[in-house]
Length: 412
Image (tube, rainbow, N blue to C red; front, side, top):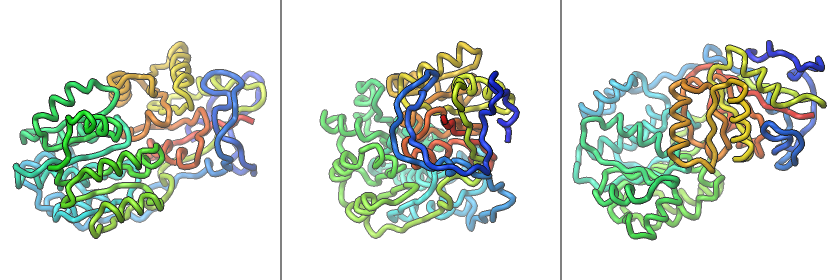
């Protein structure tokens, strides 16, 4: 693996795992967090052996053969031209199986991992509906976090280029005044996060009586983040006659209840195959007694193979400090966490996407929904609190059939 040529610490003890070792569980959390020493241990017990897994290259897996091309869906000519202009050639499984159903107005439950192309799977049919009926009511799209909402909006803008189709992003961390102004123009698409949507409803700046379609993206993440009750409140404001599209990597009992309450005879499309990406090579990095965790990270990041790295820390303060320490060592680094304004977070992500910085340090909440191409490595500098958090983190690499690497620091 790419990291195995890293320098050893001065005491000569190797920081890296032997993947054949046996071992018990450990307690996840902020032990020796983000550039410092000491710290508390908290979280659930997770067997670190679950963080060791060889990647299964695409050549070893059965290739999905779509039954449709984008031209087969019957999209409007302008929309299809924009799809082609974006470089879309072959539909992904979730697109292949969802787009026609959604175009027919059916309720759909899409079970798919992040990075499978589900944004286009719901945007294309909904855009096409509005193209065919410009007077059609508003589409409401709810995402768990700001970054995902912004990414959906960016995809929407690209797909609707030249169509005069209005949209607004209703997210926290950004001034509410411009959002209220844009909502007054009756946009075709409203893309928002639960908290800001509730805020706008309470201010009577947003009304949902004319919503013709609702999309809930990453419903499992909304549940994890405690947003299910606000989402229920929003859904209760919608007209009974509407189309509902729900997307999630998993379906828990709570999500099942939500589906039964707010969807009408939905069709389930399931394309998720594994709980973690087959294309991600996973291993642990051992931090032995007397070794400096930050120094080990610094030595890893000096290697040429670590060209686009997402580093996860536990706390907002720890992430900020780690990013500053890495910058002092000469690494091009940005940080995103809850104390950053939305403009700061968006700028950091954009700099990372463009390659202006090679390392993005993030907390779990700030990184939810990030979809960035060609992330070479994910490093769990601080341990995830749950295995679900772990699978979400490492899903940022190894996308679109590419090989990715995930390393988890284990302090012993």
